[in-house]
Image (cartoon, rainbow, N blue to C red; front, top):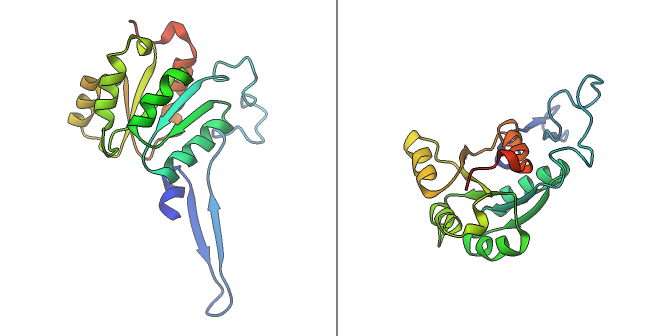
Length: 180
């Protein structure tokens, strides 16, 4: 539980008054951008005409708990999300879902994220789709491998929502998508 909460920028604390007196566990997971809750100067939640609204996100990650949690966070931000747990499922879902952005785990069994990105880039239907590698591997050589495979961006897990938001906005704006 703790690692899943921390994966999404949250914290878990435990308190007890002593043996046999019970315990209190507090789980905190951010779901709004910093300053958004109760801050009149912060922008309002996404309105229907907001650039973030309606972004179609295909998320592929074999870690079911992490994928489902990220899906919940993305949906709370107003995005349409299709979640799959393998590269083969991503290949099957992509044509029907027509995503604006694909968040693809690199370390999936069977077909890894690099091969998945190469297959997607070989299909002209995804020329304008933003591909983002999600991985625990964050060295410069890992980033280079991701770019060579066809990814537009490389994000290291746990994914920082503040780093992901500009990519989601970019996916929503056709003028900012990669050139074909």
